[in-house]
Image (cartoon, rainbow, N blue to C red; front, side, top):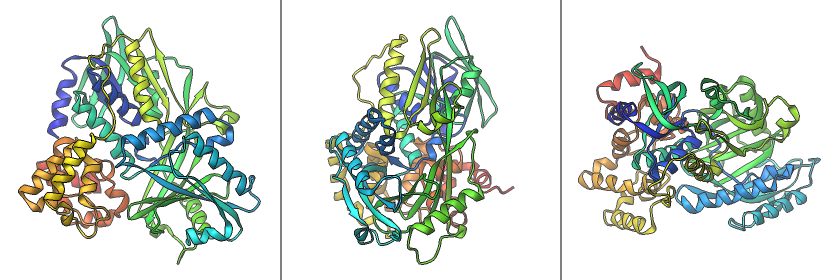
Length: 534
């Protein structure tokens, strides 16, 4: 909380080169890329960091194989290269995973034809992943016994990538990196609108926690408001040729359905793609591509019934899944880029997850439309190029702004961890050794955690039951991660609320202590706020 208070104070005290409004993946990488190059950057969001669309993804970094059906080979090639770049840059976080797709008899394409498409997809990705393979129907159950093969004509297996942790945590790490390079960032700060004069942009903002209003001055304004880009452009009187259309996606999280670490892909009864995705001790199931007009959505009873009916029909389960089996739900919209107002139904059927950066040179204003996590590094570099063209000077233009620390830093961390026998302290309930988990989450800042554990072995204890977070991690979150509400920690800095039922979280003996570490004197207030208690 002290970090946020300090940054709130700084936001009104100087003129920044760039103000980024919105801290989803587009805003996060923009702030990280610009800050690393030496620009003076401010970043605000009306919610928590990654608190809207970027916390509702499928946690996949994929090259867009579905866009091959609409012959968008250039986009597929670009996304495959972006996926490869992410995997090389974040080997501990973005990992290859196999996708197994089954095809029902009578589908619009035969399985062998689709398999040939996966070979082309693999080649378009420079053969970076494992080679696809064709699966006759008789071999599918041998590979994944949980699949119901009745009426299946065949299938295929290919590779893409996924996030080992959750999407919001991945986004936050870009924001934390930006702050390491001097970015002044604050969550729960709403833009009330921006006006431009001869000295640049003046953005009136409101601190949602205190109610205080103040101005932030910047030379360049970046609208990275995700689904709300069009809304903020109305506030700033920006006219753009691009706009957003919205595709709703939902996911239900249940106890792990299969021990195998692969994504199962089906075509649902209505022809939409349908996924079964590993999520640690749980499984995430769901679908996308429901057109909606509003960015704010929720899981409806019809959505739940659709997902449950489809999963029960496609898997051989000991007993059908019901609503009682749902641990948590995710629901959000994908903002899809359109030219015009997005009302053309033909355009809707062809829309992809490409991004567009629209630049108003005269006003020094950028609007970032669409995009997906897979392409995020390109967005950061692209935005940096545009901002340089608007007259912002970079003291360190060659600085690499993304990726894990160097191999030499990692080797030193692993050496120190081995010497103190860190992995022997891993709780039996954890699915991953401590050394691996701490490095993946914190990189070079994991050294601070080693120091705490060396001084006091109790720092390596799990504080919250069934949640893979140590006491020292929560202390570090309190100090460095601008956790402002309990939901920030449980849902976005971690994925605890996605894999532990709400009633189990509430009954955890360690959560009250975690609240005291995170919020001090406000611990009880934050607890009551999260659980809706007076």
